[in-house]
Image (cartoon, rainbow, N blue to C red; front, side):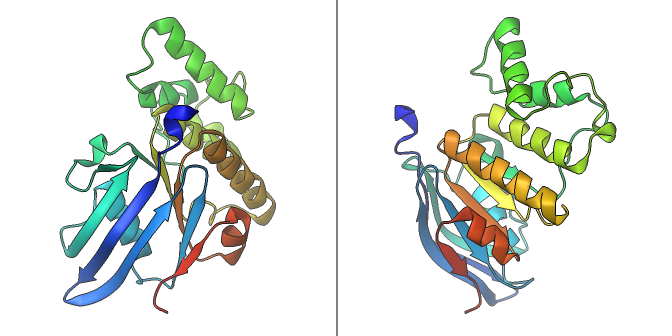
Length: 216
């Protein structure tokens, strides 16, 4: 894990505006294995913040400030070069691919050779408690299973940071606790800095890290 030690996510004077109005302004640092939670009402700029970090902010917004990952400035890089993984409210699995193909699709190019790639997918399914489900159609998965596949798909791409856009909000209460625990444990195990936006105070409590409330 030594290579991950300095893998912090740092936001420096990030400011986002829409139609001349300030939505948010913040600086923050998230260390590997920690979760920073950003809360606030709809329209406060939570999702725009994730889009800015990930490199896919709509040009209707004005944004300034910098994003650093593992000490490197990534603000000017295209989204696919930022090494930032993101989980949304919906699992967004490719419907025309099996569960295994969804995972193969995400594999980092660092994992070379057919045997190594197959092994990586098998290990991911095992870790997610989905052993033997590689050939399943994503449409046949439960909400919890789909969420776990989505998380493993993000991890197989070997991101340097993880963004969570209210990924637990559509799950029922029991499942929410289970998937939340799974996501936070996996992020910690991989020593990823995590930035989560949410409406749910239970999410913030479960994350156990710093909480920033927008619009205060």
